[in-house]
Length: 241
Ligand SMILES: C[S@@+](CC[C@H](N)C(=O)[O-])C[C@H]1O[C@@H](n2cnc3c(N)ncnc32)[C@H](O)[C@@H]1O
Image (tube, rainbow, N blue to C red; front, side, top):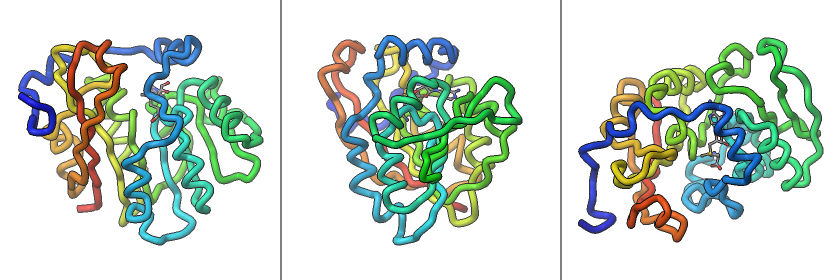
């Protein structure tokens, strides 16, 4: 079997009981095990950005599990307002520092012990808490969601709950871009977890139209340590049904 012609792996449920704790994620930031971070930003998003934005201005864009994704700055620089959620305070601070943005921090009143970090210009707000606590803070609705390294990082058993939160955050006429990975899940335990097409249909199919925009080979040297020899990325556009 060769890379791009593989549609789905039948044994995807092999990862279904795998759990990563929030502490394990925070620890990845402390120990710099953040191979997922893309310094140049996501090339498929770059390619589809204009279509995604549809020449609209002043959009509200949500970044679930945002890390220090540089794409947040792309949207802010185009005049849109960005809200992200990330459990690692270190990741959030690194984002503002690396992007040369001054910021302030304040407690999230509804979620004791957590903070929100806001750029001084006011158009980037990053909530430092679990995505599963976020619904307690009233963050409003969004026109766009950019989901990369997010659904694929959520523990497989929590996907339904995660998707319900995503769908509850969307405004009418939303556009939701979702990037997932496809590789042999019997060889690598994840994260990122393998999310097959059938799972996307199950999670989003009743509420969204689902269109696969791209399927590209993304194999890099670092993937060899996962025990795999090919991996590809799929980009989906989800819109209101
Ligand atoms: C694979 S990384 C992707 C980061 C970013 N989206 C990117 O493209 O670079 C997943 C991120 O989600 C964070 N995370 C994991 N579980 C979370 C949760 N339940 N709530 C908020 N953040 C979480 C991790 O700390 C990590 O930074």
